[in-house]
Length: 337
Ligand code: ASP
Image 1 (cartoon, rainbow, N blue to C red):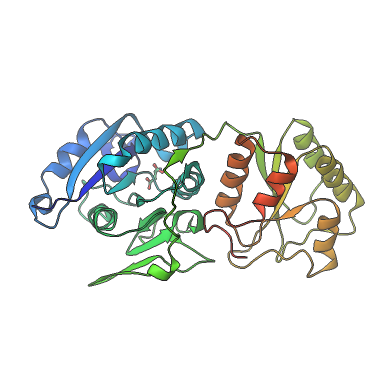
Image 2: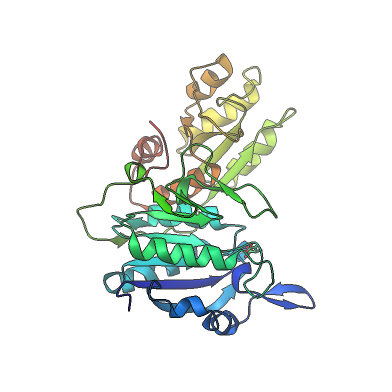
């Protein structure tokens, strides 16, 4: 009998959904019943498992920061009893949740693996079985002191991952950081890439529903519209810019809006629209103009990591200057510097 113990927090998502007339829907009790039939759970290699099915199973498009807090509290309350944790989640917002948890679970010393599937467990060609079983193996048997996202034979750092395919099995990628583990006939964990185990005990930090927005630039962008958004009382803005972090430098209205927002204490973070690579505001005049307007660099963070990190920092008791400084520092391996 395997003496490793893994706790599963089942929040919803396609993985456990049931077919209905309106398409796939989550239904309480259904997934537990389905997986109980799997002979692999009787294998001596299988860790001991406890699954907590959440009261309201959700399609992850409905996830909120309040749900992230519930997941964090759930993990914290059972932390000492288990070797690792698996969070079953829908794929649509999985990268946001994995990023948010990486910041909220401070001083994490055990694996928290977020996974799900593109096809429900109950269906013939499901990818749920492999994703769940391998996540359980990773959570039980490896010292991975961080939040990972496992999908289709790859374990990614949670805050480096993005959903980049709406229907393919290889739905997630980590454009700016290598996979933490590759799974083939063997499980190969790239130990040199893992975060250091913290000396302190786990504690959690709530993300208070933030007044934060993501705005993407495009040719013809109207600065007045951005001004309306800023005037709605936001505290943080993730500005999705071109290439290495460029924006039109010959639009004084845009630069004025950004500068005055920044002077009023809005934290504006520059995040590239590119799939891969990093912001460097010193590369072009068009990037430099943003730097002069008080915009801070998001370097090579994903939009999901940038947004959740900004929300997390705005929820901590920090000054605007401290938030700006931490946005540009590596807190959980989310940024290369
Ligand atoms: N809409 C589903 C969800 O995010 C998709 C999935 O799980 O793959 O919950």
